Length: 148
Figure 1 (cartoon, rainbow, N blue to C red):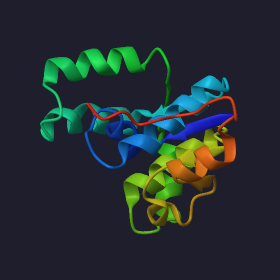
Figure 2: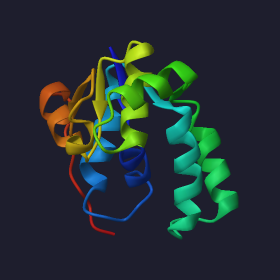
Figure 3: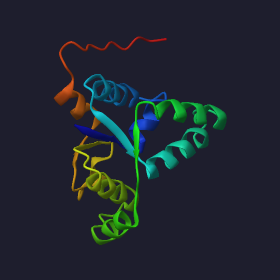
Figure 4: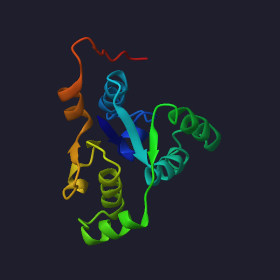
């Protein structure tokens, strides 16, 4: 199974917010099950921009994080064909439309995002991190949030 993580899910992995838990669990479940986890080159660029822009980590730390992330996540290309298709099927959020059509062309089975509404015309199935976890988390994986 090929699973694409949207930019917001990837950023959640390094952000101290309420969204961290399910984004982390979605990533963990996908890798535990041996799913092919990916993002688009567009998301890669946005991820590298957002971490330091939101002052989550420094620019230098961002590059180290991104390089390690590449050990677990494939980066899908985004082509001119994807741009044209996203224009023809625009639902209002061009970036998400572009990601959805690149995912479709690359054989992605499901997109995991916190913003399902932005993918309303996606040709690929879309789940929130919690929905993904609820569907795919094996019973042998249990999580407990530990305050620190």
